[in-house]
Structure formats: C-alpha cells, structure tokens
Image (cartoon, rainbow, N blue to C red; front, top):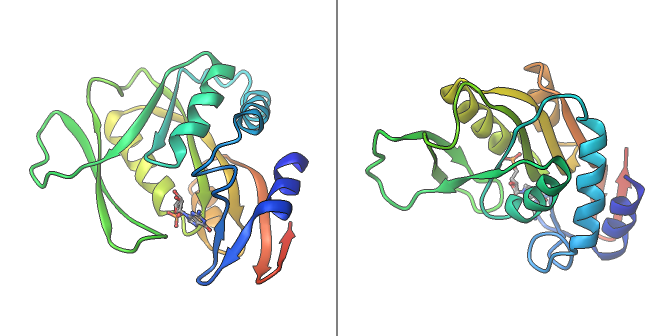
Length: 189
Ligand code: 5GP
C-alpha cells in the first residue's frame, strides 16, 4: 500500500537490531486516517471471507484492529498479556516470545469471546519472526475457530516470519513489505 510505504519512508526510523521505529504514526502516536485506509484495504482483500471477528494482541495491534473492525462491522478481541502466573481454566493460553523486549509473555483470551463458530482475521502491526502470529494461530486452534488470514501492517520480509506463516497455509496480507533496511535506507519489496 503506497500510502503506508511513503509514510514509513518519511517518518520511520531504523534502529539497531533490525527494529523499525514507527511511533510517530503507528504505535505510540496514531494516525487514524492512515489506519482507516489500511482497514479499507484489508476489507477489500478479505471481502467475502465471512470474517465475523478480528483477533489481535496487545498493545500495538489494538488501535489498528479497532479501526479495521469498523470496515468489517465486527468486534475485536485482543489477546492479553497476563500478569498472573495462575492461568485459570476459563481462558485459552499460549506463551509468546517478544521480538522487541526479549523474554516470553503469557498470553490469554477468555473462552467467552472465541469459539468454534468464529471466522477470524488476525491483525498485527509487525511481522518479524512470526512468533506473535503463531501465538494467535494457536489461540484460534484451541478455540476451534477458523482463520481467514492475517492482516499485517509492516512485514520485514528479510526475517523468516512471513515464510513460516505462509508455509502453514495461512493467507498473509502485509500492506508494506520491507526487503532490506539499515541506517538511513529502507527498501520495499
Ligand atoms: P514477531 O513475533 O513476528 O517476531 O514480531 C512481531 C511483534 O514484535 C509485533 O507484534 C511487534 O510489536 C514487534 N515488532 C517486531 N519487529 C518490530 C519492529 O521492527 N518495530 C516495532 N516497532 N515492533 C516490532
């Protein structure tokens, strides 16, 4: 999506460790007009897929997912990073390693909000090694829900996540795919 690529080129900052900082428009200050354009694009791509719910993960996915959900007319469920070690039986649970912070998060979704009747669109801000999306896929599987695909804002295509998720047969629609990046340069696929 050209608008997102142009914005990344203009305002994205490449940091050490293959991290792209986009906190001026995507995951700290949020440009909701841009989010609406992204939501329209996913709605076009996944039209006719019968999506009845969007599943994302806190924190950065939530804003994008909410604006996208307005285009689909469906609710958003966000997987929560749990602070308690006692995971009760009324939740689906998965452990997800963090790309940006290191460590592992216990991530949960209440069984009240996902089930076998659901057809999900997974949404996240970045796709790097694929751990976050794999976690969301595991939660969907535990719930017996089907997955129409994943909508990603920025895929770092030089990292293995995209290939890993697509190899599982999951449709991934990334609105900007970065082929390579370094200090002062960003190349799109
Ligand atoms: P993965 O699980 O695919 O390795 O990484 C995806 C998650 O890590 C995303 O939810 C996102 O929050 C974070 N992430 C990965 N790469 C980047 C990056 O380059 N910049 C930012 N801001 N977040 C990233």
